[in-house]
Length: 448
Image (cartoon, rainbow, N blue to C red; front, side, top):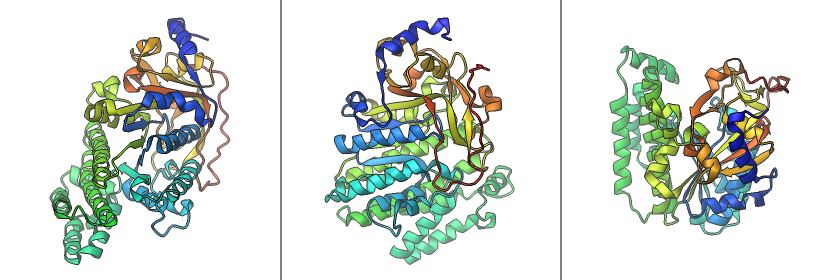
């Protein structure tokens, strides 16, 4: 049923939409034309558990690597775990295959990166890199996130053990501030937020500054591997600084902790870009993260209450060099948990609410399509506030309107959007017996 207020917009979508066929790489010719010579392509997803979002994102990324010389894939994942994949796709490290390389993703939600679609992409990326003799042109795989406080501590100490044992001892002494809390970041967050314990901020900042000085004084003409190892250590030291602050603030302010995390991810993009440029290869980067991180926050209700995000920060810094692409779906299944830390399960996704972007795109009656939001009638119509759905790693259909919808101007958030009307659950590499719950997808859209 078409809502009469949106009939003009739906007609425009039917007229201007670029239809897509599943898995057809050539269908993205128009998208690559829209991207042009931009160096930063940010590709979102409307959930962290939808197979089609991951699959099509990989198809697009492969074309950007092969045809437009993109050489970095930066993802919403912990830096140490993603770097293990980076070593594999460069033929380094001890992992014999992609499955072993992805096994580092153990922290909840493991399925977000340890899944069949990322496995296939990692296999492809390894083959692509193996076919290139010039190391500076091989594609890298980096993580952007900051949750890996203790893993990053280990990475810093391990690097220093190999290069400067005395500096390694200083690092251990500084990081020992966390020892009383074990690996429990929640306990650290509570103890410091309530004043029970003093924070470890000074110690971790001192350690980061020491590595910064080491980087600044290092030989720019050193072997690429040496500079890379120091870069990785420096990034892990910065993660510890930002993770410490993140966990300490998460009890006090959702906005502050969100902004700290997204600033960290945006700054990591800049750091990777600078590092690749110093290597002489220059940087052209694809970023994979949730729509909520990559759709410019200035055009959302969250932005109006003070939140910023990666998409906004990248646009502000790189301007015409950035291209933001979003994904949407109407219904289907998704891999998600009922609550934080619980097992991911295959869940039925309710048909989108009346008045939402997803419902309007569904009412156009096209299974898969892309629309440009840079100009034209669709762009003008989608510069008004509409409901938009976001499913992260948790999905609570019983409170869906409150838990998963927000108001946004789609044409301000993104330069283009791909709509896939019915989608399916992302398949973890290690499927547990409880993954397929047998939930039945709703067939009649109630709009409730």
